[in-house]
Image (cartoon, rainbow, N blue to C red; front, side):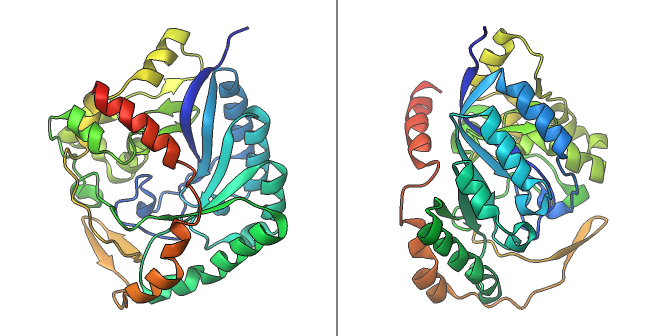
Length: 316
């Protein structure tokens, strides 16, 4: 019997649909991608990979996972196929009504819930206030493990341009791009294949939408192939232990962090028209009501990131 290969962290995006449009989204969900993982696909993919890999941490995300009708079933399939993993659903908190009773499914399957905070403006903070209260109540009443994360600070773009004008950075220093990358540990399960990171895993989807395969700068990166479930043990071990590689050059070798906001966007050929520009940033409200939630308990990934990063920085 083959012993499954250990993976520190695995992401499973179950839809690319999202109720937010965040500039710089690593899943390209700001471009209106509509792919969803069906129940049949989830069952086939998770069962197939359960015999090959043993993830320590397994995160169900999107897009927005609450926009997939089969989220409860996928949570149960995830626990069945990865019984020893720490499993978490990552959400923006805007669509809890889609799955009434989800807290019971999460508790039954020892799965935590993470709410990612994406903006500082009043309108957005209003939209997530009920979700925060709901999660705190689920924690108090049912013992659900909950986490909150800041997806505004240290946000950055990993490509140049927008839409049809998207272009890779091509910095020519994959080691440095890998060192500064926020997704360096984020192996993705997409279309029944393992991919190095979400940027690479989902690139072909946005390329199809904007015909980026016709752009010479993208061809070398679109040539990256995900690892199939019928790969050899040697191929799997090489994949798991691979660090910087040529595809990392598509992303920047130095980060230009910026404070993002969340806007609905209408994509028209080569340009973007913002439909909402009346944002009122409210840092005082954010600092007093939301920011304390980030430090209330150790995060789902914090210990993992610290331990692995030390080892990687010594060896790259």
